[in-house]
Length: 360
Image (tube, rainbow, N blue to C red):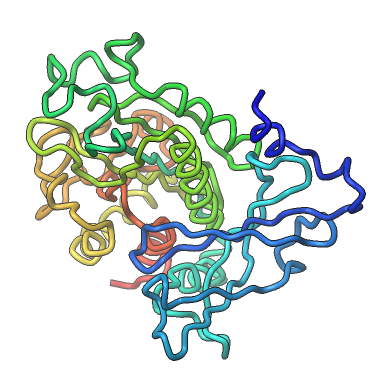
């Protein structure tokens, strides 16, 4: 083990500084996708975000504030164990406010929290399972790992989905490291698999209740960014990183409410899907940048301009009802429209708002 690695893995509880820990504060930058973080020392272990100090950062350097009034305040919202520093050290997922306490325009969590705290939504206990697809790129050429530079693997598609072997699965060590790091952190990660496009993978977060789906998905993305940083590869959440006859990358969002999970829930599901169809354009506009390159009606997608849901287990639909839901007459459905770069705070809260609160 190198001295650098040895120092990185120091257990602070063995030092003379008592209970001091390191807290890594995490937030979302101005692009809506760039994840930022910085660390501070705290006097003792803490797992309650309400007891953690607020902090500030230079918003002019993240395209979130002007240079002459650049201070943005971080409000801790969720705490996870730190899989990198380990011990009692923590990751702190935050949202951002002005010094006067107003959410900055880039703070999508604030509005989501208001929707999820509505009594009608609370009563329905909305559950989410998010299938986060992503592509691993070679650092210097921004081309998927395992692909010849400037060329294409062959044959198209077939061998790679859940594939095994050096000529089919590229980046498994990164994927497995991320899987275990998320479990260590306390993220409810349900599984991982290789996807249809070589170099593309998926992890699933959930089931999570309400705002927790957004907190856990963003933190899982942060952990993946850190692991790819260590591995020297680039994480892409682009919904169509490779043009042409290759599958794009989505973030299919599985959803249910207490009424849907109860006897007769299939009727509630059908009414919810009908409401989603009525607001198709509004949802598409909020479901990720560049999604029109992915939702073409090919490669297991519905066309972006139409809303379809007929056909149980249909992976070419906008919304899919699974066979278990049809069989049991209750359960969940899957919104297949969100792109891989969607904001989980926006998508989860919008689905709840449309299906529970909105009156057509």
